[in-house]
Length: 276
Image (tube, rainbow, N blue to C red; front, side, top):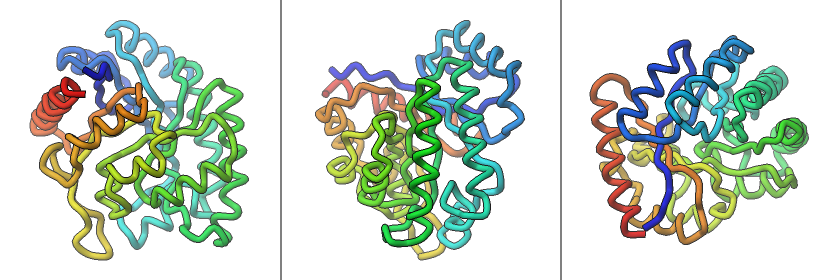
């Protein structure tokens, strides 16, 4: 039986005690904390988050750092609005990631995660050539804070992500492997993608979905077990590669149905882990 901890991704907000109590009551020992509100990266919020995690014995596995501006999650405006690839917002977003790293250090979280964006497939693309020095600078900064930088998979192919990691050339780089995103963006089969970037996986999002049905919109997210991710093969393969991190459930809806889907995903994952 694989002894991997399960968790849920939750948003940073002023009532983290309430959020972590919910996780504890649902039987989750870990969480990824995401934040798209840069104003929350302050001393008071850091103390609040650290205290809430301690009081409810929740391990925060990464600080998922959103970036300033409005990302548009499709194939047309997405390349212009998501992550560090767009030149117009790159500098301010790089500063935001460093701010997220400083915040994570105060909370004693040892990794920072984000979407870098639609990294060009062509390594000769000027957007790619200029992106690498920016990433090196960010990863170096995060390293000085005693942390690693995790790429959230999604907008890039696994081979492009592999090349980017190689070109950065630093040891504190990893992947937050979102199995559902690879399907939703039509970039790869998650099981096969482990052959390419599996050794860099440091975190996992357990999410599910369908492949895109047209060339403009992402595929549709589904409850875990109802999409195209073959978790019965994916999880054992992940374990066989020596993965020892958390598996973090992400269900991008809200309300009672989200809780039901999270609990169903928890049961599915626990049953699979028993066989590993």
